[in-house]
Length: 573
Image 1 (tube, helix red, strand yellow):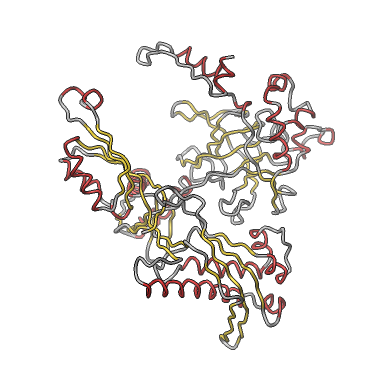
Image 2 (image 1 turned 90 degrees about the vertical axis):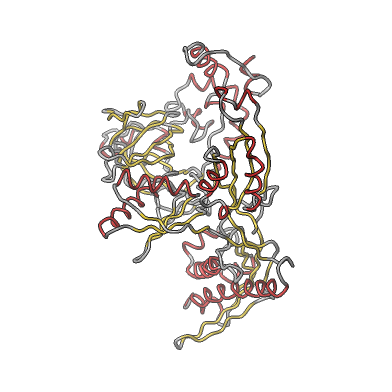
């Protein structure tokens, strides 16, 4: 009864104990096991199915997964019965539960963290992959298939199609010690550390290769392969999880080294760190190396790791804040906008009708937006002209249709250049291609897709240029469809109580918006009786205004103030 009340959130058990003396620890652990929900009480994670698993790139939502949500909801009270039957030998049990459920025999895991440990990983760079196993079992020496999901369109990453790799070994996780396990085995619900996977990155889905059975044995080497009725082997479908989304970088610095040898080491170090941390963005060319992260502290920690772990001393330049542009109202061309130019003796002619719409579904009360990459959609009229099915997803058309690829590339390239207000890349924008036309019809565009690419880019840039000119002529504050966004940080400042006024005044000059001021009392803040009472200030401040704020805060508070800053989103300037 107490467990049912706890799971339904009608009761909150409270246990007493003393961690310092080790009192009450065992009853607490017992209560966690007896009263809190188990993995069997949760629905499996949402999956996306790849048709004809290990070859065809077409994707669809797993009907089996969707159907199982209803089954799981209606069978929550039957888990004890499921526990008594073996999923690997019961066909009915496998039909009632879905992949990703702890009782399902098919192995499904996700790589949630990547580390590079010298002398441990078998991939040459010391890569160790930490995985959470949702269902099935994985063993050392298993052959697995790794799928990298795309966080943009919901499919898998075209730059990293499904790959087949072999688990070299498995490490034992024990308080910072990583010992090799001779016969490593990890079951559903457990976490394991795998070595030998050369291409796996954070967020990848890992499944057993269809030529490997539940015991990790290659079926082609088994004499009884024909008689193997394991449900694991029958299932040749591939599924992948949603992956791990990372925030967009908001701060960029330029990095320099003393010599070319250090430059090569720096490039290698940045490559490894960007694999471990997807929120780091590295841009390199012949002349400069740019590193983008989530803030000053993020950049400083990364540079410190480069020096400690790779022995490279790096100089950084002045930080550059990552601004964006967006729309606050719809923009569209006046019907079909014609593009007709002759370049190098080749005539480029096409017409497009473009509609730009804002995407502000993550608006906060203070106007802060969660940054979203531009989305391109193709309307039914344009699809009929291009000769594509109305149900086909845009990301599939981009992969297989050269004309559609040219159209979308032109749109994305123009949106990345922004409007004359910045120019900064556009974000939180939906671009709908309403109609497409050409004098020679679709065959002329198929012969020279660059015509449609140039036409689409010209239509977007014309729309944004005209709107920016109208806003500039109307004057500041007159309103318009385009707006510039800047990264905003949630700031918490801890200062002595008698310095709150000074710090608040300084935050106001930095365009900060104060959300809360919590004044401490003697019992909670005067530690030891000799210190000053503290106050906590919470608010939102533009990132560009708090660059180097640590130095300014120390000066204002005589070294007694401290602050933390976390990226919240982008807000209009």
